[in-house]
Length: 132
Image (cartoon, rainbow, N blue to C red):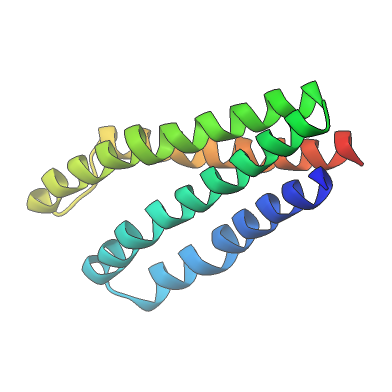
């Protein structure tokens, strides 16, 4: 069952990264893309939170300690992106709108968010491997 949960995580994260976000950025102007991404990313992270909670619960049920800690790390990373990094990115982006350019601070936080997300994708693949 855990293999399925980790597969769900990597699948939706990969789809979002390769299909949803790029299409939004290419199809919409900067202002509308920003509005849509601000609405869609919290849902993305909340879905990841929900799936990682399910993985935590199944790990406990199956007494799989490795999967439990892996799922806990995934959960914490989703929390960090949702409640810490993303709000800061949005605040800085609002400030940067006046300058019509992205600041170094925005770029660093965005890189952090993307890096955490990529790490979560790698951890999801690791979850598939260890639970297979």
